[in-house]
Image (cartoon, rainbow, N blue to C red; front, side):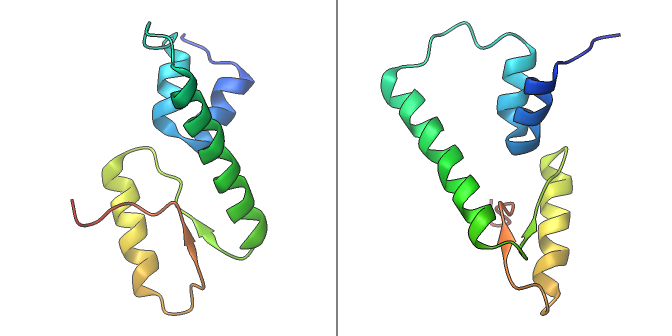
Amino acid sequence: MNRINKKTFLTALTCPTLGYIAHRGGTGIPATLSEKFRLEEGEEVHERARKLFKDANRVVAISPVEAASTTASLLKDRYIPCILEPANLLS
């Protein structure tokens, strides 16, 4: 059985791609200072958005298909006030 630690699990909840990379031991290429800054900045933006919009629905999905399906159904509901981290349905 291939187990993950708590940090990797929590990372995957925020960003499945980053969680996958963390679980697999990284890409082998060290991140540049600007890449680290953008990652930290992105995490801060997500954290602030979750605090600001406490009643928002957050799209948490295992696959892009599931994320797109969840986003589409949330967009159809006119009583949903805000959607955090929706899937891009145009691509």
